[in-house]
Length: 252
View 1 (cartoon, rainbow, N blue to C red):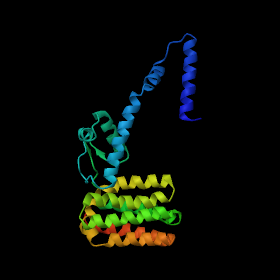
View 2: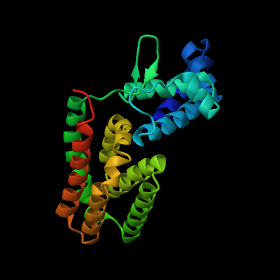
View 3: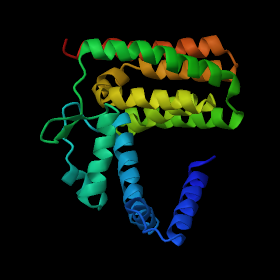
View 4: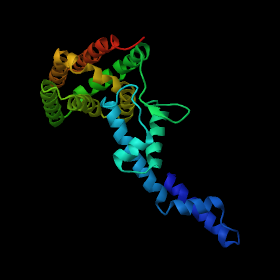
């Protein structure tokens, strides 16, 4: 039975009890009040704020240690404080944000040990997703992937930090989504929520060295050849080289 069907059954049972002479319960009243749509609107606003903050974290647009207040989010998105705080609390529950006893939210500061642990997990999950995607990706998506990488190279050449970060995530996630495994994709998103903020340390020096670009080109060539092991190796190389650079910058 679906949640909606179960809810309908419950309301029907409550209505029968009321007709028999009983008073409507507080639970029934709350259900009727929720049907007015007030709660749904708040959830919709919170979802929108959550999605926007989540993307900013994965893109590395929020730096480690940066404060993220409910008032800032409310003002940025033009919403009230309640859905803004709901979005922040949800991200805190997912360990994407830290929160202190005063309910002050901030972007976590990863140390080398934590980042190394997350890297180990990423190599397994993102490597596997790339391996699956190499034989599942459609020709149209391969063309899209190549176009994204061209735009990324152009953004790096122009030192367009924000665009480079966004396009780098889009490149990776286009591959992972092509694996056609939604649960795996969700796990990878959760990892990027944790590590995304440190990615801005890769720009511009690391990207100017060209190693990341070469790995992307190798991944595209391997996918075009439907060579799954080679595609996975290229992705693992990309993750490892970026991590090697980042680990030197992170505190112990």
